[in-house]
Length: 113
Length: 113
Image (cartoon, rainbow over all chains, first blue to last red):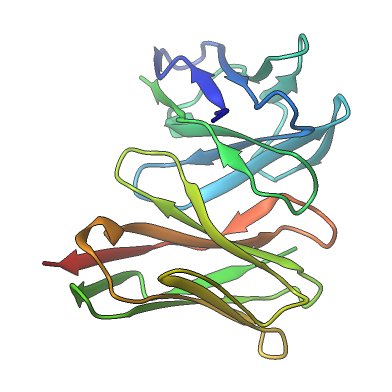
């Protein structure tokens, strides 16, 4: 069964550094998402992406964040100048269409020191 | 935007008993309500979802009910088993017509053997 994959599984970085989190959505899916989950808390929506552009973003997704689909398979989240409070699990998800099941990747645990 | 409240935050039941988790939402135009199960350290996985044109949906031991007038929906798990122990999240779209999910705060279900 196809799955969303994410790399790396764990990323440790120094405050102020840039990180890029990578995702490979399921191949026939058209909608892509990033969510984050601070340890012990709920899953929070960051951004959705469709047809090579952002379709919606939350208040969390400020100017330090950006997303890109650099080729036909990868979907990346870039965090510029990381802050301590960016430490969280970041999940990528994809869906075939609107109101279809969102399949989540295994997550990347980001630790900012 | 949507706001989703979820209760209870923790729930312990004896194996074989039923468990009920409730969520309320604020946007009366919301039309899609998924439930996700998240085991410790794992990705959220969809267990059941319901669209606003139906009032109930069942899949083996799991059922979801939707009351559009009261703007609440509930997850029912019957004949609980220890492997049902996990955190369960309800969700609703962040805005009408969108697929981006606003998650509830989660319910930690413990099934006692």
